[in-house]
Length: 451
Image (cartoon, rainbow, N blue to C red; front, side, top):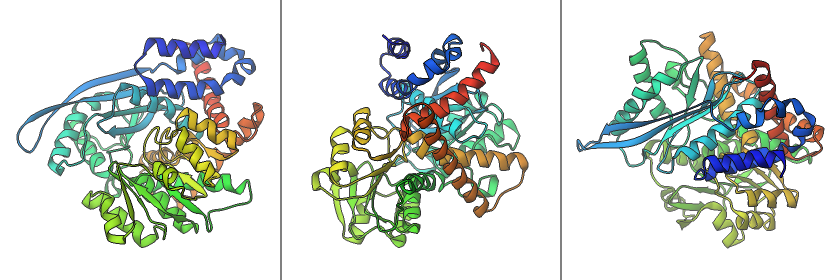
């Protein structure tokens, strides 16, 4: 058994129930095989064993009172995985599926994603199994305040800087930041994704979606292509999906899909800018289901199916896929259908939306494939830019932030290609992203000694 396989087996033995975390560790470590021979100093220093173990895991109860004066209890998490490059940095997710294994997988991915941005940020992640859907603003506020009553002890602008994720948008960030500010009696850049009126950054809401499209644009350019006239499938209907659709429209592509946990909508006429604005109003203000989009625009609606199921079952032809919903939304069967239906470029706007079997299909087909830790790094990159603005006490213009975001995504793309070539896997974005992110963190860990 190889050295890398030994490390993987140890992870699986220690935490046998954390399947998503195992998946993330295997995906990264298997591509790091070339670094074992190239960097024996990493093996001697135990870097591989240390990097898969979080520096700190915090788990806590979150009691809160609903509108009927009933006391409810949820579970909260913060996994501070690695701060070799800077303060722990990563989002907070509120979703019923949240458990320790999912938070560890997200925090582990965040280490390499943050490293790729070149900004001084470590990797972490947090969340709760609380579901904000169907809750009143008052209930969400009371939950967020209870969540922050414990979390505040473990975070700070130079320690750990959380942000938003699934189920945590500007509303939730505002409630949490307001309570943190009250408890600590200080106004600092301890959370990102804040509103513009109290320290947020322009382009932050758009950043993950925009960044995913910018990364896809760089991949397409390697084959002399762009988004003009291309048919694009997008999954999800939250922040990432909304702004991915907006940017694809700007670049001349046509998006035909959107979905949520209840249904998928296919609009073969294209989700144009006006329709995109409606989706933003529907999801961000009215918090309604995408089924209402199909009723308004007379488009097809498929209940209890995701975008990739519908594309497979209906043999819908697309050129580019942007999965922006959640982990493992594309399985092997759907990946094969994408290839058969003409898809030749896929950039992940979500974290690990493709199963390992689906990734193998992409790679065997020669598809341009941008893994999440590279393609969706625009969100955390702009969070880093928000931290910089908070430190400087100077806001940048929309154009300045967007320019920096685009440059960061171009830099990530180049780093992936350079690393893939340097380690014998030219053009393999998965290997390139993992090695480029890992080597930088490993060198920093080496410099600190055994800590």
